[in-house]
Image 1 (cartoon, rainbow, N blue to C red):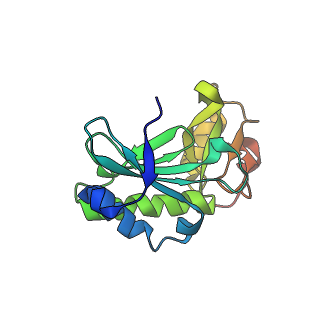
Image 2 (cartoon, one colour):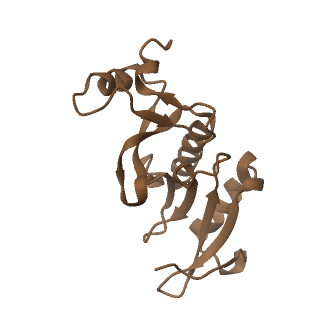
Image 3 (cartoon, one colour):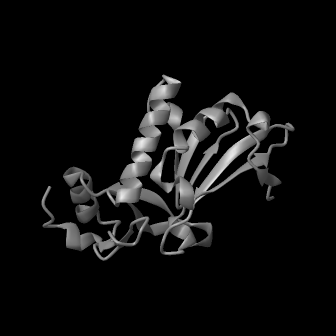
Length: 168
């Protein structure tokens, strides 16, 4: 069920939404993002930021939203994380989440094309700079070495096996 959305009115947003909005205000992707607030079942409003991929591939879109506990969350494809998993301090955890967003935008964090969940959405991310993680992927009998790795911009797309000899 799609929730009602509206243009952002900070007077209707909760404190967590206002904190996210304040950090995102200076972000380079802010101008290409769709920033709205969504009406929640409890009658309150919450911030939702959607950053479409320059490829126009909806599988590569990035979203920032607040979960049911009002914790800022980051989504890339069908993969997502919550800021409170990065640190218990709300300000530091939000900063770390936005740092991770930057790594996604730069193509350091990519989506593994398979497996997928409903609608063909990839739900696993791979850190291209983590040689151990890449080695685990390359040697796993469950993963095809020909699996595509999808970057947010499309500029850093790769095939897993092509990263075998990439410098650390």
